[in-house]
Length: 311
Ligand code: NAP
Image (cartoon, rainbow, N blue to C red; front, side, top):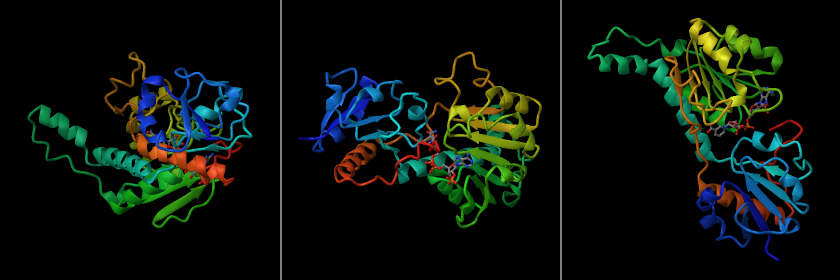
């Protein structure tokens, strides 16, 4: 019998993946579109499944996450934790995330927004000089798949780069800080603080007033990980006090960002609508069909999430 995959995605979006999934030797059903017997489902894919749904599937063999982050699964109190949860890891996704980070570091470093304003005022602003690159220290929270690539690209541009992770790293040219005991020292040398952490019980709210106070005066914060990492009111306060120079945010506590949020109009914030990197449907579909083939052969997938650790 062919394995049966349940797609748990908004019905209008299912067509993004279906043409690629349907080429594989599997049967595909779409939640809220197709009738199915829960016991017939072998595999599920989603980004943020409705809480409680996965536990209704008694014969599930593997759950696939369409995103690199799995907080949308782990927040489900009824997640069947004994079923392997496999997350999407892709070189192109990491490259696009690194592009986003490099773009926003350079926009700030080269004062592009000030030049944009000067142009609007027909003003020749040649006196605006960039700080020296070798004196502009980058700190990356999370030196995993994405943080390592972003760090390498920034290093190539001449920035001193450090990263903070749970365990010590040996990425070439990147200074490694590890664990809570080295967090303060890491922050103290981060003129740019870039969050690329997974959202877990330990990292939720990590971008807060205390963290900002430990950054050098005039630091710039980039959050491209998850909205739950940032206490938005603390960021606005640190920007308004002048301690932080600015911030770029791709992710928010509530998405879409509510119209009344002060973030939209804040002069020191660049906000984008969770687009730092979008998983390519063709690549993601291949990742799922390859993952199903591995599971059918009884192999453990290398991207299996450690549910107890939270990422
Ligand atoms: P990853 O490979 O799992 O790397 C996670 C890194 O964070 C690892 O270096 C890990 O340390 C570190 N870490 C985790 N918990 C920690 C803690 N408590 N203290 C210190 N370090 C900790 O993840 P990834 O693939 O790079 O993805 C990172 C995140 O990016 C995802 O979870 C997702 O939320 C976000 N993302 C956002 C977008 C977007 O469009 N905005 C797109 C893709 C991904 P160890 O190495 O020591 O384990």
